[in-house]
Length: 161
Image 1: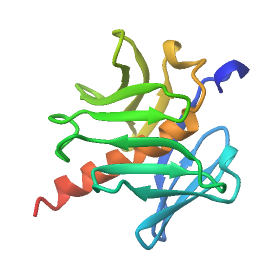
Image 2: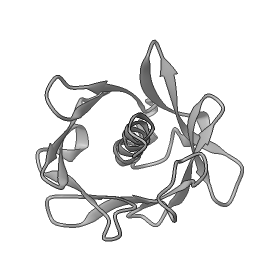
Image 3: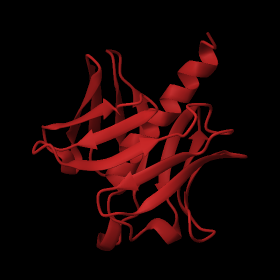
């Protein structure tokens, strides 16, 4: 992925036990652990975690040394279609995550380019970097954080209380 010339792509798979996996170039397991999520696999190794932001409108992905890798949040806490999410990576890159006609898109705030997309394929969510996003670092971080936002939105739709 990134400069390796390999396109970042993952398939979101629910686990029989709590949590989910991102299946792709390397399997990433995301399992609930109290208020946090444990993230293992691919470049994350055995020790990353995702925690809710202080205002509970998003998530922070944190490595084993307590450095944040990325933050995904919303301003209003509403559905992605009405309230696009911001995604900030540790390198300072800032993106917006929006609902489109056929799925979700990772867009730049500065230029009209889609860097990655989540689409439904055969009943499953699939993530893929676009040509514009092929060389972006941090696609695993982006995939984990955006998958959590999609799952949050789906659980809100299933239980609107």
